[in-house]
Image (cartoon, rainbow over all chains, first blue to last red; front, side):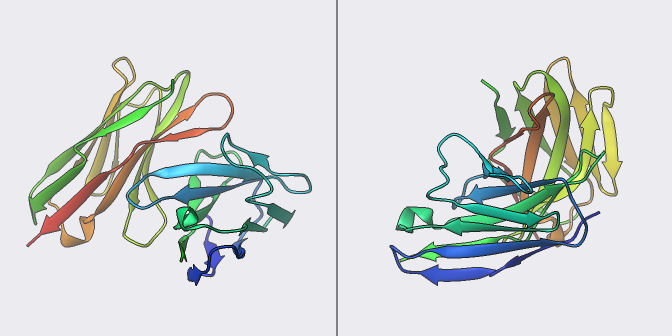
Length: 114
Length: 112
């Protein structure tokens, strides 16, 4: 299994500012993902965080708005840039273990933009 | 288009009762189907994962079924407890591209 921690757990930010969310895993993993969950909705994949190279973004998400870093196999950050109230969501980090279908999710970061 | 639909959208049951949640999908080619439980304010936690060849899988009081021919799955909860109150999300994985398709979830409330 994998234990995932995220920081911060929640934040309230003003529009126009940026927030960086950290994701730490207790073991080395190949696949790391960032998801967004808007109020009352299910999860939407933002991007796959690739170690040592640029993240792979899903349709509708761009690097300028959601820059992602992954310096090693246990850590990643997601930045939400130039925030607007529409960015108010829960942001979740997820990992998939090698040779396993299991995908584990972090506790999420609840972001409110005012 | 790959889609996962869940029903009902929400459900209220009395503690101790059983319930069944439904999931229909159109994801192809199919790799596996997962059920997750998401408590309020937390990330989803995996309950079961089933591949094409599995048609039933249990995890304690949770039993998932899969009919790959009709592309339907169900999650049966036996002897419900207050702690079962959560959102239950059906997720289907396509065979290529490592992508998960999420259902909208069923919100279950167990009351005493």
